[in-house]
Image (tube, rainbow, N blue to C red):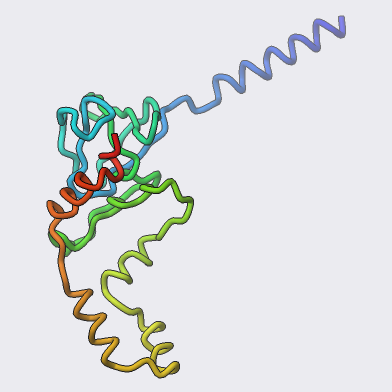
Length: 175
């Protein structure tokens, strides 16, 4: 009798665990301007849809740096891992063409080192107030700061970055 009770208890426990588990697909969000849903896991494959930053994706599968995903409208295709985030992403107000590339260059080498949004935006703006103060304390000449400001003021169009990645066979273009 104890064995039957024990088996019944185990059956109830595992049934509850099975039905209580969240079987919903993993979610990702588009984090890069110009992200495209592709027919196959190749950058050269046909584009199913152009995606905006913040678009939610349901993950169906992951294979060789590509996610097979479904959009809320039912379209299914592939997106390169460097174009998505595991956290919800919102497009920043005032972001301009060529000013931000989201995760465009993220994950290219497979490195586990990541730059967070604060580090990325700080590098786009130039030195943070703390870094500026540190440079002053260390006696860094003002001419170096001015040169950094010139470099920071330079803009690169997304199409130029895209061509660079294609020619170098970098990221999603390494086929």
